[in-house]
Length: 486
Image (cartoon, rainbow, N blue to C red; front, side, top):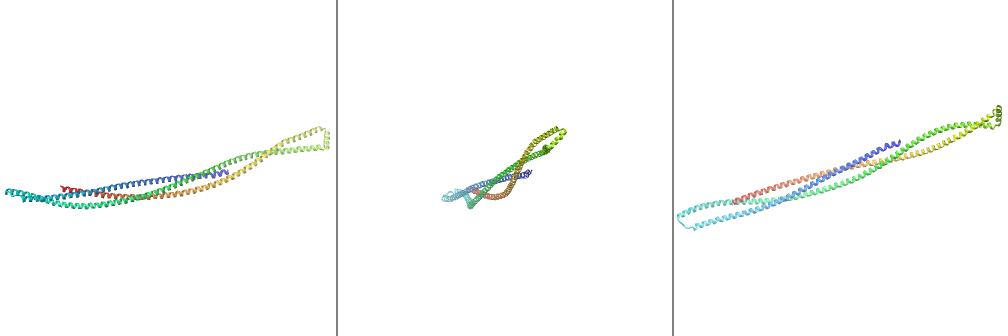
């Protein structure tokens, strides 16, 4: 009962605590694995998002580069067109001046021919002269009108030529200003583009280096965490193995305790049986003692009667006296018969006492020997049980001490694991803070790129307005040229 109480009071609670600690450790490791996998997925998603953002920014940069190249090509084409238009305008001005020069030469030639005709013309009749004079006057008036008109037209043409020259000069100045402005804009655009490209490339390189370093650090931390998880798994396996060995030792000790308990029960049953047999033997011995006492009393009476008879036989005088008396009374024969019968009865009683007492005494001696042997065996078994009980008690104390030390170690390991989890949470929070910083920096870079894109759009709009102005000026120049030709 004592061993059963010890086993029932100590081992079930310890086994339950061990299983609860094992379950807590497994749950803790499962939570650690889930947390690490979740953070790994988050980091991978963030890294993929950053890579996608970088690829999008690179595509935008390439598209802006292509747009800048196209716009530079358009600016070059516009510059060539302006140069071609200037050349065409110069050619048209030279042609107009040549035509005006030819008109003036023709006019002077007509005047000279008219004067020659007036000098060489013969004097004819008055009527005809008058008619011709009238005709000539009318022709002269008409020619003078035409000359005046032509002179007016020439003055208008001169004014228009001067106006055109002024417009050409202004257009030339505007062209030069536009060319200088376009050159400056191209230079500024090239400088801005180079600066933007350099800044974006530098920022992207720095960001890529930072992200690669962050990736390497994250991979290092993940590798370290995986190694730590493997070490913790190994430690958990060792702890589970130790718990299994402790449970096996507990089961073995409990099995030994059950066996010892069964042996104690068997020994107690044997003890009860031996007590019953001892009680029966004691009762038998008491009955045999009573019989022996009765037989001893009978034997004493028989010996007393024999002694009296021997005394009677040994005293012949008394016998002769008795015989004489019997003879006197006539009963000698009867006395002999009585003496013989008494002797025979005493002899049979002695034989009967010997036959009864000797087997009973032998049986009692053998039973006493067996009882002594059984008592010695019981004492040895009791000593062995006490020794086993002490050994089991010592093993139980050692197992309890080992179990308590293992529990202390497990508690320390659990506290260390909780501290590591806390440290891991701190590192994860710092990593999330660094990722938030990276996101903030990416937002600022995106805003900067958007501002640069807006500035680029503004410059494109300015270029478009300049191109429209050039087109409008070219249309005006074409209209003026067409008016001059008409």
